[in-house]
Length: 128
Image 1 (cartoon, helix red, strand yellow):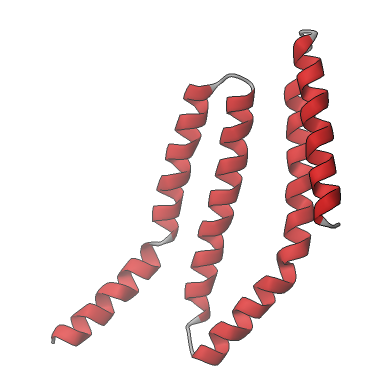
Image 2: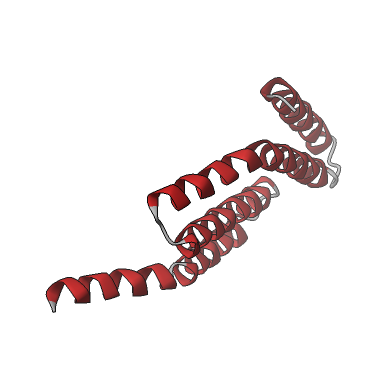
């Protein structure tokens, strides 16, 4: 799927959601959510070769694969959190969106704990 198709899906979904919201239908949020999932799937299928390239470059650089895995997990948490919070904002639930964003930030921090530990070990090795 190319960028023109993704943009077309997005604009069509936004127009359909606006029309449905205008007539008072509760299905506007579901149209927006469905379009978001389709677009996210299209983007993820397009970037999968990039993930392979990142792993190859990390291996060539001698970087531990677990560090790359942590970064990819954190990126996935960020993408999912953003998608969910924007859907909540679209449906008028700003407070819920803020709580989802807070949970996403906490999840990223928890995911990064192994990186913090490794960094502290490196610093400790340099000091001692």
